[in-house]
Amino acid sequence: MKKVPLHKPYWGFKEIFQVIKTILLKKGGGGGPFGELVEKKICELLNIKFAFLCNSGTSALEMSLMALNLSDGFEAILPAFTFVSTANAVVRERGIPVFVDIEETTYNIDTKLIEKKITKKTKVIIPVHYAGVGCKMDEILAISKKYNLFVIEDAAHAFGSKYKTKYLGTFGDLGCYSFHITKNLTCGEGGCCVTDNEELAEIIETIRDKGTDRQKFLRKEVSEYKWVSKGSNFLMSDILAGILYQQINRLNKINKLRRKKAIYLWEKLKNEIREEIILPELNEFKESNWHIFAIRVKNEEYRNKLIEYLNKKGIQASFHYLPLHLSPFVQKNYNYKPGDFPITELVAKTLIRIPLYPQISYREINYIVKSIKEGIYKIKHDK
Ligand SMILES: Cc1ncc(COP(=O)(O)O)c(C=O)c1O
Image (cartoon, rainbow, N blue to C red):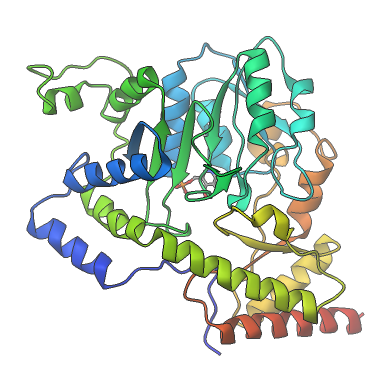
């Protein structure tokens, strides 16, 4: 059996021809024709007013936090189990990340714990839709309304996922997606920020373009463009936007195939390995794009041994986030200790990501299940 990678982009000739076409058209800068087409498509698909492509999910989060223009020392509530970019975007704006534990079923922020963390300095909640499964957005929006807080959804995993029939990323004031090479839709590196708020949209358009009103100039709304606010170059190259254009055309197929393969893998694991592993809660994935297939085992040692065994078999199974509150940066700058977020710590120690991509073959899935079974047997009998 050949190696089974954790992810594989679903790219084909359409993406190749698109790159050639963009080059032949001598396009490639940010805010070009393909970028505009993609933004229009995203707005139509998600039923949202504004979409801003940018060069990563990290940039989408950074633009969002910048756009809120909060005063130094503001607090942002976010899960302890997330990628560093969610928190970094807060720190870069001189805010303080305030961590909250997660639910054991979805690995999303535990909404019951949010209110306890709200202080006078709290200005924003940043829920993260882990694996493309929606956080409890009705509860988060109710809290944000009660305390007058902004909501920025970190929907890096969740393009095309829904929560109660509405697309994730479109609930909050701002929503952020990633099109990194590991994501369901990808152009290598990329992101997008969406909003229905006209005022925030105007600010983001400026921030994304070095803090200038260049986009207004290009639309002939002003006669020359000027430096009008803080900003950076967050634009996505039109070569990458072209790839993304083709990927968005494939969205339904990609997410359908991921679902089909994920359910096959889930059922096979359920039928063949009755004990020893905790499977994802199928109910929670009804509206998800199946960005991640993760199982859990009983402890860290067991987890590491199983990953090692699978890696030896050529299967690129992997751990995922390390708890952010225990990271060297947070330990140096804020006041958190081991045990503060028991579910985050438990999940981080016991989770294994299993390869999943649209074109994974049933043979490969069978091989993964067989290898997990063998690995478990080996761990049990090597003692
Ligand atoms: C939850 C979350 N937020 C943000 C990001 C950052 O996205 P990007 O890699 O496109 O910068 C990631 C990356 O995987 C992520 O997992």
